[in-house]
Structure formats: C-alpha cells, structure tokens
Image (cartoon, rainbow, N blue to C red):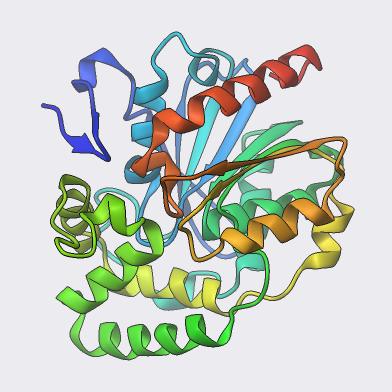
Length: 309
C-alpha cells in the first residue's frame, strides 16, 4: 500500500523501513513511545514532531524522499519520540500523565536519551518539536552535539497566536475535531499554496491527507501539546548559550518564520547555518521534503567530517 503526502509518493512499506520498532519508555512524567529505525551502533538522531502530527506523519515523507542510500538513512540510528497519546494506535489518553510545558517535554527527551544509553546525539525537531529539541540541547550540555531545527517557535506567543489559540482550545474541548479546528491546525503547518491556494483552500492532496491523519489523533492529546506550545517562554538566553553545530530550516510561510531568524541571530554564527524554504510553511518535512535534501545532506557531511555522523 502506498499513500501520498505533500506530493511525495510514499513507497510500499516493504521497500523502506518506515515503521521501525516501537518501545514504551518510562520517564519522570510517565511513559512515552519511542520508535527506533536503524543500527543502534550508529550515531543517534533523536526527533520530535510538531503539534497535530506524530513521528510517522511528520518524518516519513522526508525519510522516504531521501531514500535508502542517503546519508540521513545510512549514517544514523533514528529515535522518533511521539507526544503521549499521539502515537499510532494510541487508545487511551490521560491528561494527568503528560507534561504541561515544552521545558518538561525537553526533560522527557533527556530521559529517553538516558534510557537508551546514548552518549551523544543529533536532535531534529519541527515546529513546537524544534523548540523542544532546542530546549533539550540547552539542558544536555555535551551530550547533544548537533541540531536540525525546522521552523522553530522561539519567542513567547504573540497576541494573534494567543487569541486564535484560545478559540481553538474552546472549540476542541467542546466539540472535538470540527472543520474549523482541523483548518486551524493545518494553517499552522502548511502554506496556502500547499493547501490548495486561496480559492481552493484545503482541497489539495496534501490538505485531504492531512485532514484525515489529524482527525484520527486523539483531540485531547493534540490539545495538551498545543497548550504547551502556546504557553512557551521567551528562551533567548538558552539559544545564546547553545554551542552546537546547527542547521535552521525556515519555512517562508510559517507563522514562526521570523522566530527562526531570531534564533539564528542568537546562536554561534561559526556553527549555525540558516536556510529559507521559500515555498513551504512550518512542516517542510511533509510539504516540500525534496527542498530540504541539499542543505540537509551538506550538514550531515559536515557532521561526518567532525566524526558526529
């Protein structure tokens, strides 16, 4: 069976290891699902997805687009972390058993890394997941040696984001997934072009696939992650202190495009590369994964030359 995401024909499962091995890992905030792909003797790449997605819907298009022989696949063992209740097949969700802040999620990442005995990692996150990974990198010291941040939300939520966020919270608590709540999440993820343009908004293949995938997630779990992102702090001091090799990929039509510019300005210019993804929104890994491959491959080759990949 194959599906289409963002214009990428996803290969049959037998052609590429997109499923991996899922494990439930205990953390200080409760259990979390981690899916591993690849040889555990290779350097570790730890990922965290954006709000409204899970590791499969967020990262599968990128990995399949890159291909089996790419450095992204060959050089790493990947540890995909799913927000509690958003993993494939999730049945139950208990709001009392999940972190309520992005900082707490960064602590969960720390627990996952320790659980697998990983001495050094490269982290990769998208949207709110990129912010989680940046916070983890700030906590991890020498354990996190490199980071790939796709459309990170760096500053605290601005007035318009907060207003729309409160409307989303009210609607999804009372009605669950509705046409409006689904559209709101998709507009955070993708550009209008990707969704079908202003006149045919939300009728592209990408929009139809995303609508189906999002509606299958537990709305309470998505809401909990959303609220954590909405309550994020301004962490300029943390980003200024990061001394890691970093690649920032900025979706030009992401609500957090300017945040990525701020993050780039704060980090070590000798170790940080900023690249604009001009035709995409926040979730470039889904909307335009092929555009990521060139800067991503160059970054991984740089890591390899330093013995980090």
